[in-house]
Length: 312
Image (cartoon, rainbow, N blue to C red; front, side):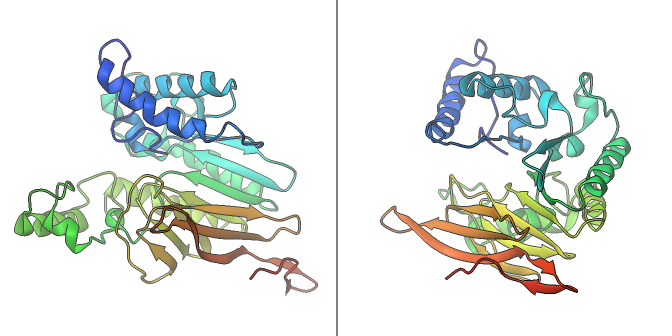
């Protein structure tokens, strides 16, 4: 998610300069897929909604589909909330547009016109059904907003951010910056923050539904950080640091946390086990290995854990 940051895909005719900037940013990502042998999948984030809402989202979807010459690269499709993607007999992806749930529907008069699911409760019913039906499969839940985070959206702010609340690093406002941080942490005024009432509602329901399976993995972006957290027995991978650095802390259920730029690779093996590897950008611009851990283990023979893959 947040494939086009910060303001989604503008209209080509009405905002020529902004459109060209957005196009260039998206083209840079698409270029990395030129020699990719697998199936690329894009999901939307909140910033992908920030240019005319559903209209901007549709522009982005069509642009990606045309560039990659495929109708199976942007999920969920058509501004809808949820879509299942079969990887193989043992792995399934559930793509969720979390901004669909969080956004103010009154501002989007055509909301759900193209969707079978037209209210939030039906969304939860659909998600529950998908988790239960695929309980024996590794179920990768791809959702932009994480279910837990120890970055700014989770109420953790760096001293730099409190000094420069605008994020530009040019005009220090220490008192105002600290006040903004406190308000974000306590009021939940922004739907982008975990403290927000609707975000909490979404988070609590999804985490509860995930308990129907022992093989659910949350994969998210949103924060400009790399994190690995286990929330109520469900792994949460945050890999949103592809473009800039952020702030995060190693707290509570955190197993790994860094504000460095980088990415995560989730590998699912034929024995049902899985592992995540985090990589960062070193000072000289090269790739640097940061952290790895088992995400899901293989259980056989009266619940005995068996490791079929050995890693350094």
